[in-house]
Image (cartoon, rainbow, N blue to C red):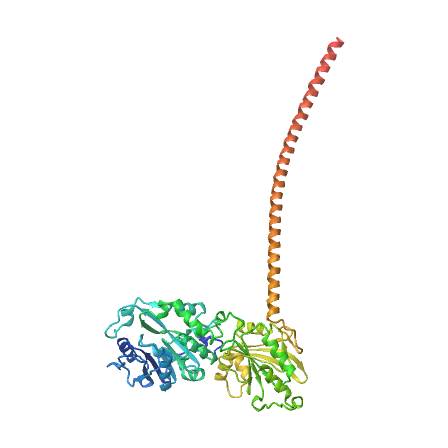
Length: 538
């Protein structure tokens, strides 16, 4: 079965399985002999076969040096790494590891007896998994010997709150999470060794954030991230991050921003370059100076500043003609080289290979110029729909189809892992992430150079737009005031109309009463006249 996105639910590891994979448990440690003794005792109780388990403890400059206690798994090795830092210690253990699976374990984390077995049942069903257990943090006193019942000894304990929140918000990381690699924590995580080989060792230049950064590279190598609640463990005490989250984030973010393009909020400055760009665009640098320049300048001037342009050409064989440069048969290549040689966002390359840490790669045929916002919209489409490949139909003719390709590097890495003999790679990408076709009319590309607004022009346009927005807001406020005034006047008019209606009603009533009185007077007058006339006749 192939996993689409991070929806590992299609994999159904059996509760009972025949173990065959070897696991290397790497435990970096600096001091803390008492805690290490408990960690190794907990490893000695694991239900996964000891013959398939190797434990490598790396002493990272402890004084006094660490030793192996009386109770430890058979074949446990103790190495020494003088280079300071947890990343260096883990890399030393990784270099010595021989297992099919690498299990990171901190020297203050006690695994429950079935934890490694719970990890390994997943690794037996797919070779591209990263499995993380559930750690709880206890402030109970550290015992002299490992308790028989860890839960009884260390509860109540705190859960790994942000991991629990991440898992619950994304339906167990299956609901297309944007950053599932955040699950890779070194406390109790296992990784297929081939994935580690593809991603590379931990970055020992980092002060903090090594786990997350390596998790990102594992994702780029095609990893699927699985939270396993049956793999339980107890951390002795609270972590440094739990005690000092803001200072830890301050240090970590300063470094990982350069290395994890997915953390877009850490890259708010559009005017600087980053070690790992968000997108790389691969172009044929031999297509002619004007043609190449039109495309490259449009890309550099577009709305995606976090970009690298890879110009592929025979740059190593280039020889500049100084005596008769206009007659140089390679003049266009010389001009392209000279024009972009010192542009930091352009790389002159011999092949179309791109740093695997770059999340997106646009492969664009010669002679096509993207619109100012085209690349940004294609990236939005790929990210929002979780697509592994977006094809842009540029031209269709009897000669064939001309298309641009926006590739998600992680999807292509996964597709290569699961690719069947003779299968088209794009078909495998469609299975693991999805493929879509769009038209150049919707995502514009042109064949002629476009006028570039430029940074100052963009500032002027933005300022004019802001001024216009302020003017419209002021006008809207004036109109709201006018409407309020009209409403007040209308209310007065309505009040006056009501009073007038009341007065008219009163006058009508008075008039009716007057008419009745007048009619009564007429009757009385008529009667009086008749009586007077009757007396006169007599």
